Image (cartoon, rainbow, N blue to C red; front, top):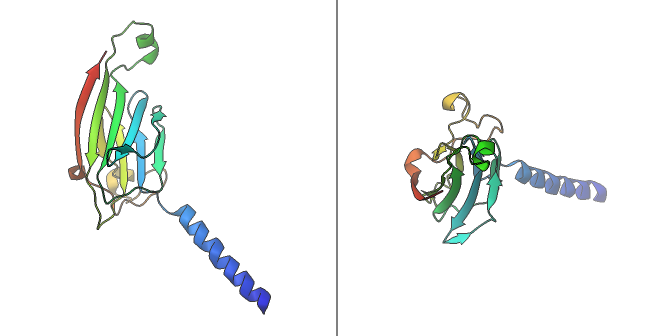
Length: 160
């Protein structure tokens, strides 16, 4: 009898831990830009994670994100479509910084699933332009995702 109770207790702890590991993250960014990007994520004016350096097709996932305050993304990206030629000086390249503020959602606790492409940050719609209700590859639920109206963005710097 004691062993059954102990086993049941361990099973509950294991299942609770597994559910937490399998839960959808609060933040997910997919780099769909034609080159690499540098991403800084800030809340209350402070970096909440060290700077990310992501190549095309790579992503950033954060399991926890305080949605009671605005989230600011600063993304450095290049206008160069062929990095090898730009590095050799064959094509001029401009590095730009796009700053996006994602509105807080303290009541709704909206998830932030976004993609960066061509100097713009856009909410992910999910597979088949939103028809599946889930992100295409990782199957995160889009039910509580932000919309375009929740994102305010602008190019704040441009340098060669």
